Length: 95
Image (cartoon, rainbow, N blue to C red; front, side):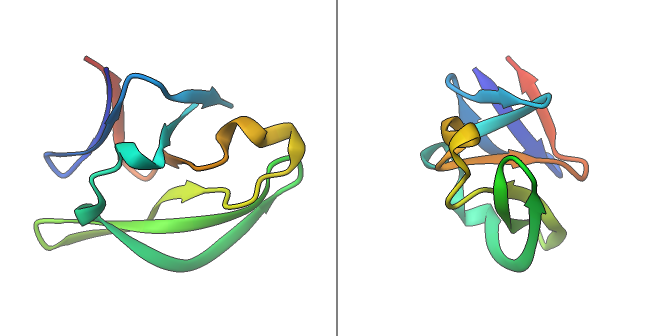
C-alpha cells in the first residue's frame, strides 16, 4: 500500500499508483477528500498539459497547492488522467 501523509494524517492511500517523473499519481478515489480544497492555481507542462491544484488542510494547517492533477492530459500522459500527485512536504511512502 502506498500512502500520502501531511501534518500527521494520511490524506491518500492506494495500491495502484502510476509513477511519472518520480511522482506517485494516486487515483482520485484514493483521496481522503475532507483534506482537499480546490485552488485557482494552474500550470502547464509541455507534454502532460494543463495542471490544476488542490490545497491540503489538516487540523487547521493549510498547505497551498500541495497536490496537482491533469483534468484533461495530453495523449502522452493518458495514464495519469483522473490521478493526483503531491509535493510541498507531503510524504509518500510504501507501507
